[in-house]
Length: 260
Figure 1 (cartoon, rainbow, N blue to C red):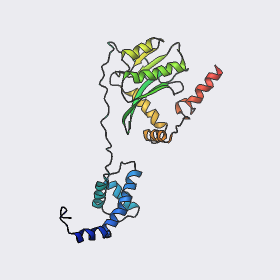
Figure 2: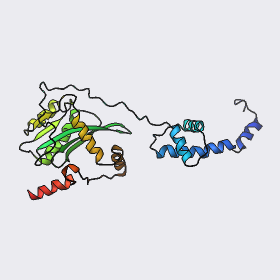
Figure 3: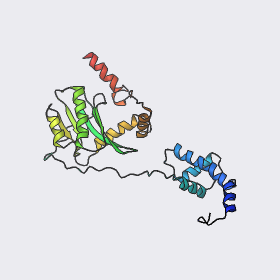
Figure 4: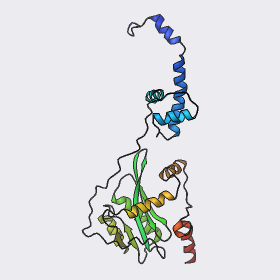
């Protein structure tokens, strides 16, 4: 007691004292604050939590919400993150011409493939997802995921596409001029089966934008819906595409394989 600088009677009085009205109010309101914060995926700051509680009929002030969030260590996740940059060297002396020239219509399977990759923010950092899409059916024929933005990421996606589709006779492969696609490893993989390489002009992100827009249109809420499916252990395999007259890419490929 002497070390704490309080009397024995004062200590026991504090120990047996019931919580005052403010403590009880903070305890009750603190639970609501945390529930609102977690229900909105930890993206709400104090002002938005305050407005959320006011809409539910709670009697509270903004400064009170700020204090309770500070006591519980609740901080909104920042909306903007530093996007990853491609710092690799482009190893091709002569960049292939743009043979695709925005002609996104194919007359048969394995005639035109486009390749690209994107990134998703996860609890463990950036996750990079590469894919190869057949422009005839709009089906993803090869994909890969990695925690690093390397040539191996896109090489694995192309390997899966070639393994699933075999060695097409005349195939045009189009991508951007990223260091992953201009790497010797990736170019050698395309040269072995005789795949014709086509690349967009420098700074032309048309393919990347089209590829990402297609993935966002396939699901409402875009990337967040994909991550929610991963948490639940579910995925959406049926996806109608307007470019192929509202057919499902997988069903269209299966139908053509039966008729051929």
